[in-house]
Length: 329
Ligand code: UDP
Ligand code: MG
Image 1 (cartoon, rainbow, N blue to C red):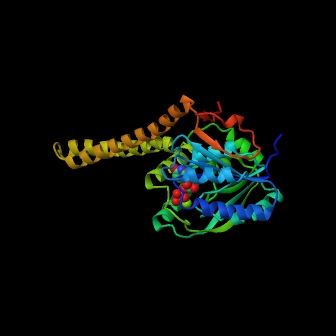
Image 2: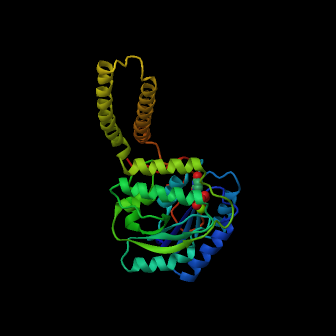
Image 3: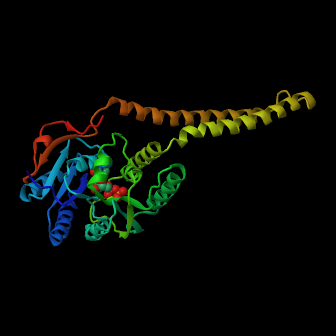
């Protein structure tokens, strides 16, 4: 029976050929210095460059490395989920491949976990090399999210964190498709402690989160952790009802007392435009939830694995085969 590694490092990679060798070098150095058993699980999220070649070669040369290739690009959160389902460690470090989050913090995180923490999350004191736009949108997003959700999701924290096997098993048992992993881990609870650090700039390559992906990510977080947008229509409805009543009184008085029969085109148009835009907005909010409900109801696997390369002593049986997916339902 193969033994369970003490630590797994899990990193999703999308077109990361430029950073992967340096990433493996730095993570390898940290793990070597620590001693003990460990594994590195790399997930190729449908890269179009040579990421898979680089990682599968690394896995063929080093028994500690497991390379997982997905069938196509599933997105950061699902690629990470694939890696988390495959890893076997007692404690699991979630990290991006671009070295924005230093793997050298692992010993400090492990020490905090020795002290009784279930989750040690990296909290950014500074964010180097990221534009004003990214910083500003992140700030607004996290402030809004914490206002409308009942779960306390830490500010200025990404997915960079160390979690225990117990927390990971709970996370994997959560079946949702539209995953906001940092929120799901916060939702699990237990003892979660921050580790303050300075976030670096990417070592190489460019961000794989264009604006479009950022919006989707934010929408998944919002809809996954709050139904406030659905309730918004009730508030808007009450406000419009009050404003409408006042306007009706004004219109009747205007007709009876001041003989205004044909005026008011501008105000009519304004009310019409405002109301119909609100209706479309609320329809959109309904659609966002309905669409996610539909996606979930199909019960498809969250991701599909094409190939796994590893030479270690792990059982390959559950990983073999085209189209193996992760499903909980
Ligand atoms: N990533 C992924 N699939 C995607 C987009 C990103 O696996 O569709 C990975 C990427 O390779 C990196 C991590 O997710 O390891 C975070 O992405 P990135 O650093 O580009 O995001 P940023 O730090 O700019 O928010
Ligand atoms: Mg990054």
